[in-house]
Image (cartoon, rainbow, N blue to C red; front, side):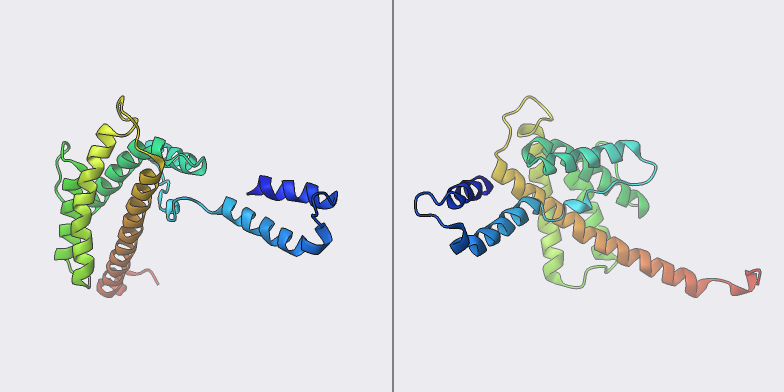
Length: 204
């Protein structure tokens, strides 16, 4: 689009082929704005959820590598790393909540245990959300196959661009929602700690 705009500008300034810059400069400026905005938009809406965390070098390098692939508009080359990221992310959540998991359990298995935990502890308000999360377990199960057979995890034929974008957006949207749940749990725990604190022990 930018190349076409530049081509028109060259012709219009020279007044070639009936183009006239002064006549259509407002349209030209609007087209420049559109092209600039499109360049700034990311193909993955919630890529910011792929965060680095303190004191975990491996996790941080993984997150950085995934974001770099998205910045380069190459989601298909990062599918295996996204799978690894989600595995580490969900494992950490299970550890935080004392959810028992085994080292060799699949991603969908540990994600299923996390979903069961938040549902059992009434962190979900609607049946629809519960059903979406439970269906997401099957989506995550399919992600295992993508990682093993359609990513650079092995010598595979890589999945196409459009489906890779769809997978990235689905996974990052799920992570975004889980983060909101975790923030709610954290706030509830802080409230409980404040309410049960023994203020007589404070040194003032």
